[in-house]
Length: 127
Image 1: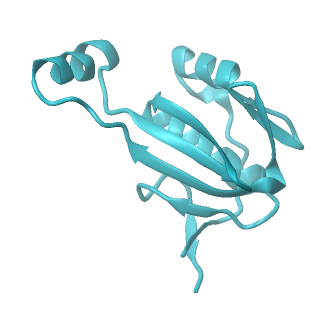
Image 2: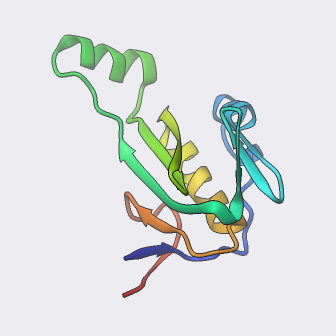
Image 3: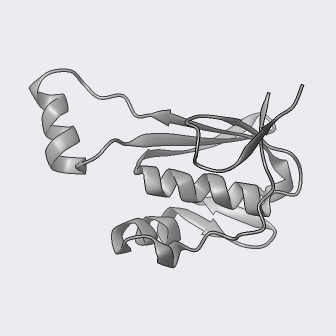
């Protein structure tokens, strides 16, 4: 089982490009005791798992247009799982996905399982 390694470095949205920082401020509002994801408050200690998955794209010309002209890069969905609930940030850039994962690694006081691409935040393997 892969666990996010606790981080001592707090991610800063100001380090992101303006459009990505704006998305963080609008959809992932961080406070010391909770995060508000699209209006849904989640206490940091409730987060049990984070999953990052590539956003699916349609094959053919429509998928190409969306990928290359609308978004311009690969997109991801990030899910935060807590209790029997989930909060998902769909169609976000890799930079924003990295920010979300690193924020959880910094703020969450309990171990958080991680599924997704390597390198977004340090992880450790637990039996």
